Image (tube, rainbow, N blue to C red; front, top):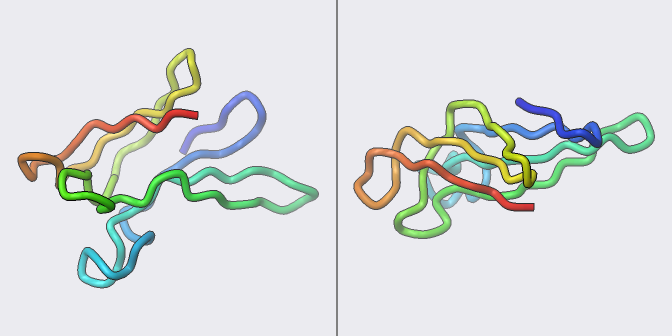
Length: 90
């Protein structure tokens, strides 16, 4: 999990998202948690498995670049089935 300069928290889950795929458990998501009035508001930024060459079940951490793009990896899925490197842009 990683924080941005505004105090938002970003992370991934190996399951969740569209539960009609990946054995009914979902293929994982990238999410953002924003602090609001003592609670956190969740936003799903990407649900994996949305298209044929999408990555599946992200398990590693995320990193930011200078332009606030998020990068991560998935161990499976992708064009050849052996994982992906993905970018989520603001």
